[in-house]
Length: 221
Length: 316
Image 1 (tube, one colour):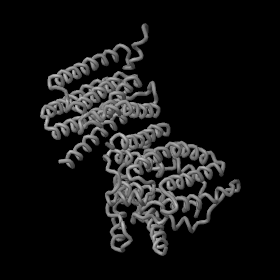
Image 2 (cartoon, chains in turn green, cyan):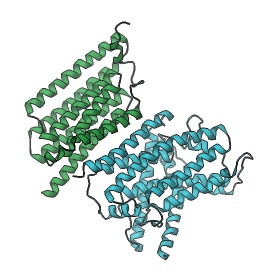
Image 3 (spheres, helix red, strand yellow):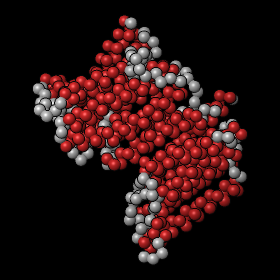
Image 4 (cartoon, chains in turn blue, red):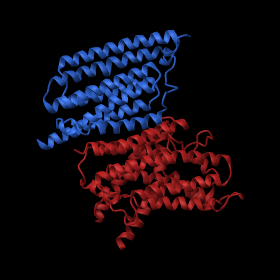
């Protein structure tokens, strides 16, 4: 039992490490459609992590949350975003507020910050998933950073979704998942948010012939 | 003492013999994937033999650095190779230096190549050297950090100890994540340091893109042969390092003849597998623009840093 739970905990850690890895890939990636693919991959790892936690702890309601994550974040949202990207005339992020190597270094610093902050909390948590909490916190911070560093609406949206993935991982890691009704509400919110943001991106494209959100700060043409 | 001498000789022979084969194998895989028949896997041996017989042409404007560099590069790479376990987990020179010595022996070769590129005063050589300096200065921290991540889990920077403990499943029990990150980082570093595709293209002499080829453009005859052989050797050193640190399966942990035989066979299989993988990757990806190389190497650095951080975070 001791050994199997040890291996289980290692597997959960490995899956959350892979989640973090895809975050860095998103930060380093300039092509918008590749960013969306990476987000889908990250969500797939999230499904895997949640399913693992569900299997190891016997909390079956996490399976449902994992299944919904798979449906919404791996299939539906990437499709919606792909459709939005197909309408755009610029397929890649040409100018960023922070260039890629500097962005990667900042994200490295964010990892350290998150680990430093969660260090006192970790020993208080559950045995199985407590290490993932630090990683979940990092993913939220990196998602936020992506929203700040990018100028295109689509990549900002991907940053928002990465933050949401981090929060889901955090909830799973800290309390073995939120009550199902809360999860359902969150999934619905995220789906609607993506749909609205998709429409808004299309409007942005029509109005300015670009999805650069910095146009929105200008009052006149 | 005798054992050590035999081991040094054996490992030198294996490394020198296997490195042109690796280069030939990668070319063959690429050719097959492009639906060409391609030259024989043994072609690099013939090339080297031919180059050694040819008379070198040396520009009158060059200094001693130009003629000394091929020997320095070849010797430093071979010395680095003798510090890396190849088919026996004990390295022949493990009393001389550890993994940090390997990194800086390879860096010494790179440094002299850069000087030689500048020495002839041609614009191509200078361009190649300047580009090589960018790549080398960015790969070094990534390589050192990824190696530290591994060294921490095994409690030693001595490669023999690291590989020996990994082969016998000893050392601090940690999660696989630090290993995974360090492996990914080291693989990117290996591609960049040996001038493979996403960073440099060894198959062309296009002035816009070449790095390594631009530096050695002035060389001919036996000097060129030595440099090409050293480049192959560097590839073999990196592949041996990755194969034995991350997958030391089958490596001989004793000096018994049968164990060493199995070790040699396993080693050849492992590095051939890596060479085929590199050939496939080179066919799949296009070369990056020079100023995008920093992005890739930034990723390698961050991966190595994460590996190091994960060692501390996930140790509980």
